[in-house]
Length: 84
Image (cartoon, rainbow, N blue to C red; front, side, top):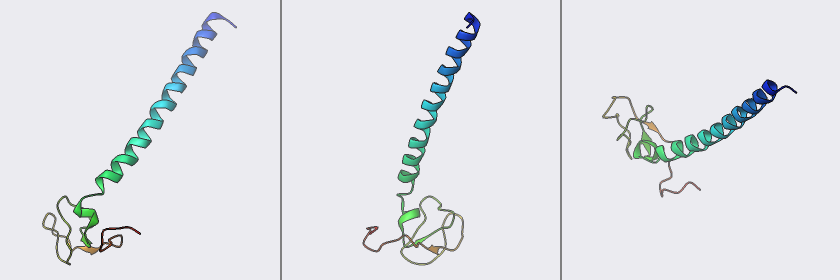
């Protein structure tokens, strides 16, 4: 194997390792971020805005104060706050 082929092989292996490492970290962070973002009342109220506008959500049917859309029943809502 020539010296230039060996250098190319080392650089290619380093690039592949770096790519695999960085991609793995991104997927874990995005999952964690999505879960923490869905904790506000725009996701947890009995009635929510279909657009999940910040600060929207209510225990009664109505309209979103931010965008004016009708609230929809939140199928994931549990009256006591538990998901089981």
